[in-house]
Image (cartoon, rainbow, N blue to C red; front, side, top):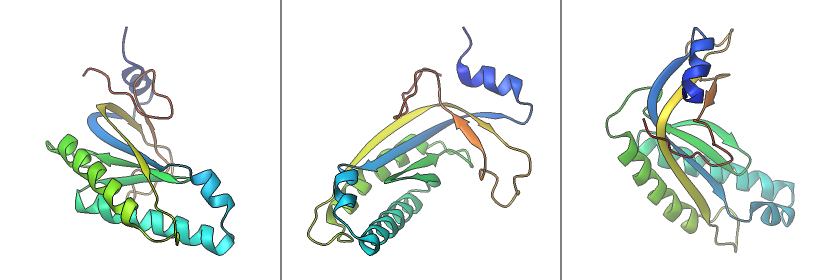
Length: 156
């Protein structure tokens, strides 16, 4: 049986299939935390979280594909292929745990972050009308079959 991402790519002529590593991270207990914050506090939380993730990802040559609520998807090996993508993803994961634990953008709260890392084939489908200066904007990326909230690695 052909993997889901290869089937998708065969149906989408502009699809690109490549090996990549993704870091998925999100804050532990954020729903309860945000309920206790006023609007300014929620905005400070979101800005601080996104800035921290962006900074740490950049130090490890990661590409923040998207922010999702209280977390993010960070790609390694996409949009540029890199042999050290898995190692860079692990280093980013370790550093983001420390950075979030020491962050103070929510006064009096010690934050924790969950980190999941997966490597495998990734199908990137470019949607019509996407500007070339941001080739992944509006794209959809599909991880292999069985992928739920957290990516699951498959053999490649």
